[in-house]
Every structure is written in structure tokens, then in C-alpha cells.
Length: 229
Image (cartoon, rainbow, N blue to C red; front, side, top):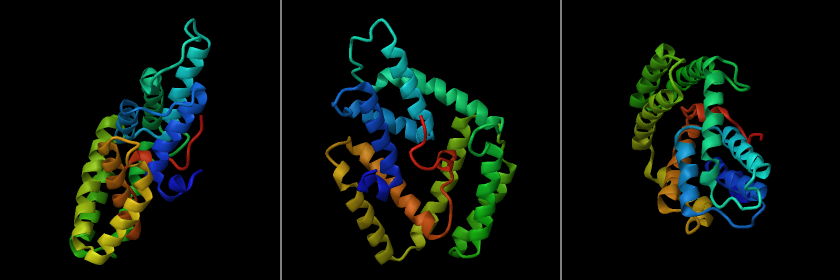
């Protein structure tokens, strides 16, 4: 794992997809702007890394045994269909509580407990919001689609991050931004600007939440490390 990946879990997701695709494709060419934007879509949709890697592997394995195996796979888009299939399998397992990680119900309950525990140490408006979100999580439907759960959690996380950021001392905010910008500097010029800005926003939010012992409100973030293939 490179120093960039070790320092920033958000960048690690993108880097690992690139390394996995390039190594399994057997071609030294790196990702194009269109490829990076596809990874961004998977990341924003909340797809765990191991699910994406499984889809990529399935697609490239099928290609290696297909009639067109003599031709190189030119784009990550070739794998999109198999990534969608891997996503569907994971979503079914998640809704049934049969995923190798936590099921959706366990995840929502865990987030609620963490929010309850941290609320007392937060600035007053953020603490009140954390308790309100915890109550909403306990009432949420764990059988809802991944898309709905992802949007539900993201909206509440964004509100909580906004309140915490508003209460953050200017010096702390500047230090947090400088740290993230330094970590992500190697990616500027390699990725489209909107992908880098997404990375930056995610990294800033994670650091702010961690400072207050709060989780990222995402089923994606139940996944640790690079995941398996």
C-alpha cells in the first residue's frame, strides 16, 4: 500500500480499483478520465470496494475465456455490467442480513448507538441533531433499497457535518483542509477535477466526524481495507 493510500481511505478506494484493473487486464495503461468518473459513480452509490473488485474480476475472467480474449479490454466500462451484478447480489445479502459484514438492520442500529454516545460531547445544535438522527435510524426500514438507504444516510450525515463545521474553530478547519490537500496533491492532474473534489469533500467529512468520535453514515463504510476479490 502506498503512502497516499495509507494516509487517506477515500483515495485508497480509487487507487485499489486502478491497480486491480490494470494488473488483471495485463496492460500497463492507467485509467482514463471516463474510467475515473465511473469509479466515482460506484463510490457515490455506496458500493463497497470488495463488491467492485468482484465485478471487475468476473468481467475480466469471462473475457479471458471468451472468443474475444485476443483483444485487450480498453476501458473499465467493460466491467460495469458485472459490477452491477455483484452489487445486486450484495444488496440482496445485505437486506437479508446474510452479508459477510453487518446487515442493514445491524448497521443502522450501530450508527444510532454511536450517535447517542457521542451526542453529549458535541456542540449543542450538533448534539441535538445527532440524537434526532439516532431516533430516525431506529425507525428506518432496513429492507429499503441500497439507493434509498444511501441517500437517507448521506442527507443526514451532510446536515451533521455542516453543523460541526460551523462550530469548528477557524484554525482547526484550516489545519484539516491543509492536511487533506497535502495528501491528495499527487492525484491532482491524474484525475478529473470533480473526482478530486469528491475525494476532498469525503476526506474532510471523515476527519471532522472522527474528531468527534462519530461514524460516517454509510453502509459503504462498514467495509474495511482493500476488500477481497
